[in-house]
Image 1 (cartoon, one colour):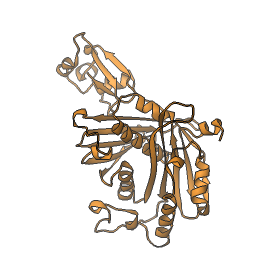
Image 2 (image 1 turned 90 degrees about the vertical axis):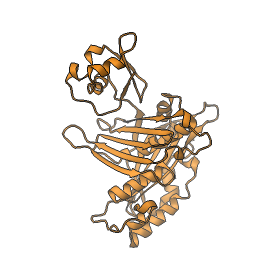
Image 3 (image 1 turned 30 degrees about the horizontal axis):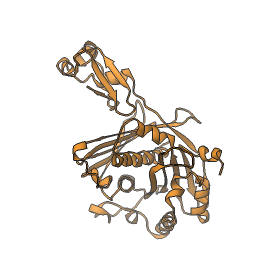
Image 4 (image 1 turned 180 degrees about the horizontal axis):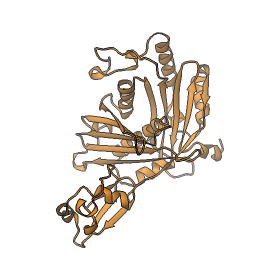
Length: 339
């Protein structure tokens, strides 16, 4: 394959539909975008893996939300990996790239170098937040940390909150092309059953871990058989097929699902992007009193803040901050952390 074709599929999400089985899906490839996300921080390898998995999940899920301008995932637990947060910003116009960012907080003193990345989260939850912009109420759905991976948590969320059977197959890690430098790559396939007019769900709970719903609690008959068959086909995918670059997403779909009538749509480019700004950070500090602001002021007489996502550094005069100074509504995001 030529390098031009390899590059063409980097940092893209390709939507598709399987006409023979009423299933839709996405194929994602993250290359330079994931490198940019992880380069903002010096994370341990296990935290890098959690951020990489969350980022590719966000890219796959976010592309399904065409009419909504922002999707966020937040994973919070009581383990050493305390927070993993991602944001997906839909394109401002047709043909423009979507933007994605991600960040994690962890306790270095509690890290177990032999633990699996997912086990470092401990007990907690995954939240899916959808912000449709000014004038619309934000949506939030929560699912417990369970199933052994962030992918499994996301599958449970869709089954539990949306009654949509969903499956993810992901691969991520450091790789090196011949003659090139080592860098992060991630890829994945998302399958999702098309919405049913009136999904039937067992009243006594689901058959999954802790009584959570699974696809078997939602689909039956021909729909259940279709879902099972397509998932068996996806089980044959190999890691190198997911992260490429030797296999194009279109070729992968034909290899996996040629008998299911795959139909592809326009690919969506994705780039690293952060929406932090001095005004947003200032608004985030407007919830504090003058006394609080005084405790944040450095010996040099300024208040500093660093963006958790992109590392941007901001400095402010203390007198211009706090609710006594601004009387402005607090910004609900987490762009900046004051010091």
